[in-house]
Image (cartoon, rainbow, N blue to C red; front, top):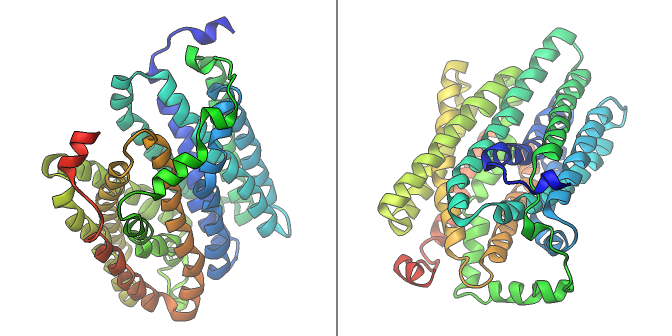
Length: 424
C-alpha cells in the first residue's frame, strides 16, 4: 500500500471522480424517465416512481457521519464505485424481465443510495486531498466533468439507445446494451481509481472518537434551523425551482410522446441530441455566464433578474405544446430554456452557499442541498398525475404559474452581502 501515499497530481483523479459521480445520478434521475417511456410505462407512473429516486440525496445527511467516521474516504469511494457497477449491471439485466418495471425500480433505488453515498465520500476526499488553493482551482474542473457526465448519460447514452433501437428493432435489448455500457465505463473507472487514488495522511488516521464526539449531529441540525428567517429561507429553497422541477420531469416525455397524444413525436436519438446534448451544453454555458455576472454585479442585484431567466423560458414549452413546431425550431427553444435554467440556477446555488456560515457551514450546505433535492422530488411526484389529467398544453401553463410563488419568496429572504463578507 506504500504507493498509495505518494503525491499525485489532482489532474489524474479529480476529473474522473466527478465524472463517475455524474453518470449514475443522471441515469437514475433522468435517463430512467426516457427508457421507461420507451418501454411503455405511462407518464403518471414514470413521474411518480422516478421522483422517489431523489430521496437518497434528500436524506444523505443522515448517514454522512458514518462515512466521515468509519474507514477511509478512499475505501468508501472504491466500494461504492464497484457497487454502482454491479447495480447498473443489474438494472440492465432487469429490463429484459417480464415484470421489469418494479424490479428495475428496486435496482435503481439501491443504485441511488449507493450513488448518494459515493457523493459524500468523494466530496470528503476532495477536501482531504487538496489544499485550499487547489480546492478553489479544481471547483470549476469538477463541475465541468460532472456536466460532461450529464452529456454522456442524457446525450450519448440516449442517442446510442436510439440508434440501437433502429438497428436491432428491439427496444428492451437496446436499453440493456446502453445501460450495460455505462456499467462497463464505471468498472473501468473503478480499476483506474484502485490504481491511481492516493491515500492522504489525514484519511488514514485511526478514528478513536465516537460518532457523537466527532460530529455533534443534533447541534448541527438545530443550528441550521435557528437561522434568521428560516421559514422564508425554507420556502425559497423549496419554491424557487418548483415550476422547473415539474417541467424537467415531463419535458423528455413530451418530446417523445406521439403527436396524437399531445407530444412532439421525436425519436430517442433526437431527444438525446436536443435535450441531452445541445440542451445540456446550453445549460453549462448559462451556468458559466451566471457565475461571471454574479461576480461582477453581486448576488443581491442579480437574484431577481436571474430568477426571471430561469422561469420565463418555460413559456417555450407552452408554445411547443400548442403549435407542434418543426425539429429545426425545437432545438433552439429547448436550448434557450436550458440556458435560462443554467443561468438562473447559479444564483440559487450561490445563495445556498451564502446562508451556510459559521462553524458548521459544510454540514449546513449538505442540509440545504438535501432540502433542495426535496424541492425537486415533491413537484416530480405530482407532475405525471397533473399532466395525465390536464394534457400537455395546460400542464405547461400551470408550470409557468407555479414559478410565481418562488419569485415572490425571494423578496423576503435575508441577504446582506456586506455583512456576509465581514463574517465569512
